[in-house]
Structures are given as structure tokens and as C-alpha cells.
Image 1 (tube, rainbow, N blue to C red):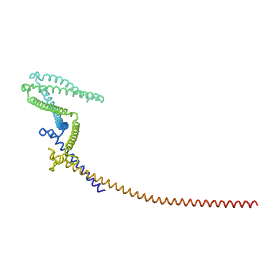
Image 2 (cartoon, rainbow, N blue to C red):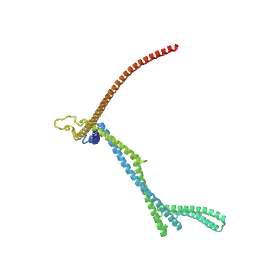
Image 3 (cartoon, helix red, strand yellow):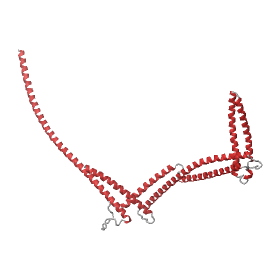
Image 4 (cartoon, one colour):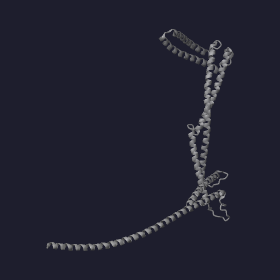
Length: 411
């Protein structure tokens, strides 16, 4: 029986393998049936039109979702590249702005120090006036600083504390006016550089090579900054286009989550397509083959039962072989399982028969014991009667003796 159980286990593994092989072939065959059904050059017509439309819709949905994942992945990669580039560009832009502003302020200070109002009464005149007024204020504040420093040297302890407090406030005020002075000169220089006011009359307005050189450097810095800003604008347009592409696929907020949703949809579509292919292939095969792999068309006498099965005779023949093999294995397992059941019943019958014999032996023994007990009861009853008679006889004798003794006592 152990050998039979091991054989059943081996056959069961083989049965599962063959069933899986048949299921895989059904899937492959079903895909072929659907492909032929939608191919205009073939138009097999082996499957119902409504089911073909369902399959076509599932395949189209899967392709759409797959393409969406590819587009989202490409857009995310492009977005990451652009964001990394923008990060570097922002650093470059910030540094270039600092250099540009420094160059403008340098040019503005140089122009202010060498400004000839007679040569240029309009382009830098207003800036010169504002800077001159601010310079006077700054000069007054610096004079106050010098005066406080003198007081600080000659003051006592408490006087020094008070002077230091005033000195701190004055220093802050001086810094603010210096910054304001720099902004005025920088803004004025920027207006000249961006407008190109000195381009045509450079030599007549800017006297001295240092001014000409500073103006040229400012123009060059403005040009570099403009190029970087143009790149930044193009970069933002590219990023906006990428975000727009992501929005088309509903992936603007969370591309990873959207791709996972699409993957789950593709997985579900694949499962439905596979189920549909297996079901359709099995149903198509059932038109020609029974569960044992035998042809339902009968044998035409030429020894080939697949000759009339049409364009898919080869596939049906392979399915017939697999069904036949599965049927044989299944029946072998059924025979072995039935044999085991029979042997088990036979063992049970043998055990029952041995129990019956044992019970009959016990019953015979109990019968003998019963007869012995009945005989003992009979002997005991006889003994009891005998003893009762003896008891009566003794009692009678006792009464006689007692009567005799009474008579003697009366005498």
C-alpha cells in the first residue's frame, strides 16, 4: 500500500505538470485564435465576434497603459535632468548677478569720480546728482564718526559707554548710506549699460582707458547674464512642457503612484486576456475533442482522425495528446486509489471476521459459565431444602426436650 501511495504521489505531480502544460498551450493557442480573428489577412472566424471585441478592447487598453508608463518614465527622467540643470543654472545665475552688480557699482563709482557734466548732461546727470547728495550726507556722518572717536579717547568710563553706544548707531547709519550710495551708482550704471547710451559716443563721453575698460566689462557682464537668463527661461519652458505631458497622463502630482496604478491595471488586463484566451481555446477544442482527447468527428477510415479539423488540426492534435495523457494519468490514479480503498475494506472485513470469531468464542465461554452457574443454583437450592428440613427436625426435637423438662419440674 505504501508503494501505491508513492506511485499516486508521483502520478499526481505528473498530472499537475501536464495540466499546467495544457493550460499554457491553451493560452498560446487562444492568443493565436484571437490574433487570426482580428487579422484582416486571415479573418479566421473561429471565435464569436463579441468575444473578439472584448479581447481587442483589453489588448488596446493594455497597450495604452504600457505606452503611458513609458511616457511618464521618460518625462520623469527628463524632469529630473532639467531640475538638476536648473539647480546648477540657479547657482551660476546667482553668482553672475553678484559679479554683474559688483561690476556695475565699480563702473558707477569710477564714472562718478571722473564725471564731466559738460560732456554728458543727461545720461548720468541724474545719478550724479543723487549720488552727490548722498555723498554729502555720508561725508557728514563720517565727520561725526571722527568726532566721536576723538571724544571716545578723552572721555571717562561712563562717557566712553555713552560714546560707544552712539558710535554703534552711527556706524549702522553709515553702512546703510554706503549701501544706498552703491545702489544709486549701480542703478545709474545699469541704465547706461542696458540702454547702450554710450555705445556710439564712447570716446567723447568716457575719457580715460579705465572708464572705457570698465564700461566694456559691464557690457560683457550684462551680455553673460542675459545669456544665462535666456537659458533659464528656456529651461522653465521645457519644465512646463514636461509637467504638461505628465498632466496628460494624470501623473503631475505623483508620477510613481500613477505608474503603479497603471502597472496594476496592466496586470489585471493580462490576467483577463489570459483567462479569455484559455477559455476560448478550450471551448474551441471541445468542438472537436472529448475530455479523453478522442475526436468527436469519428474516424474516416484513413487512420487520421484530425484530417477534417481545419486550419488548426496541428494544435488540436497536440491538445488531444495532452488530454489523452491527462486522462490516462487520472485513471491510473483512480485505479490505485480504488485499489487502496478495496484493500482497506478487505482489511476491515478481516478484522471484523476475527472480531466475530473472538466474540463467538467469548459467547461459548460465557455459555459454559452460565450452565455452571445454573447447576450451582440448582445444587444450592437442593442444599437449602435439605438444610431447611434438618432445621425443622432439630426444632421439633428441641420442643420435645423442652416439654419433658417442664413436666419434671412440676413434679
